[in-house]
Amino acid sequence: MNVAVISDIHANRHALDAVLDDIDETGVDEIWFLGDAVGYGAFPGECVTTLKDRCSVFLLGNHDLAALREIDISTFSPSAAASARWTRDRMESDAFEILRGLEGTSAQREGIGLFHASPRDPVWEYVVDSDLAEDNLDFQEERIALIGHSHIALYFTRVDEMSRVSSVLAPEGTELTMTNGKWLLNPGSVGQPRDGDPRAAWAELDTEAFRIRFHRVEYPVDEAAEAIREAGLPPHLGDRLFKGQ
View (tube, rainbow, N blue to C red):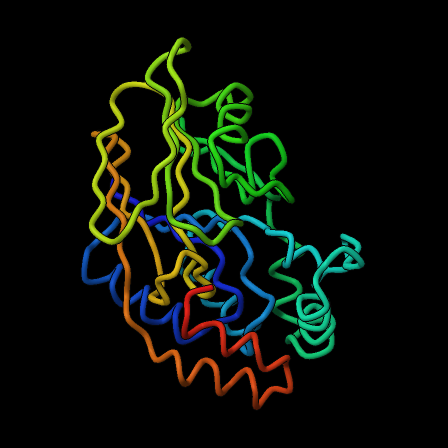
């Protein structure tokens, strides 16, 4: 089965639309979404309803849980907390109902583990270095797991229990064959990339051949940033879209 793996939309409708168009041109059987439909951007309701229509897997992320008032936002950055409060006040009721009906922050499909943040902590942990990946590879039951949350397209692999974990960024066009070893992979963020590339990110996964390819997609960043400013959200949430940070 060919699957599109996407994560961290963060209410960026412009980026989501561009990625879905690219996915449709590529051709896949299913779309798996790893969480954080809302937060930061100006179109939370539209993104939630679109994802519900298009995705066979729809996980909750920490920003989704914040919108639902299921986690404390006191540890959020000031702009993230402001965005959470804005989303609580502005998002349409039907989008809240969609989020309330979701299965949680983790799942399993085709023998592959799916987690918003990490196998060890699906809500909060940022897996961004080899030490954290080592711990999670030890923890995860599946040979291959997919994660989001850090907004960085990258992967970690360990050939066998005696080998060290390799940590590698995954720029556009990176292709991997995962027939051996244990793997932890992040497709990057659709709506808020933080790996220095402002283009929206997604990954194409063949669950039978165990192959994955990382994609990047241009979208109208200026329009997404202007929508954030017009909505009264913190302006720097739009400014950073231009830098991929």
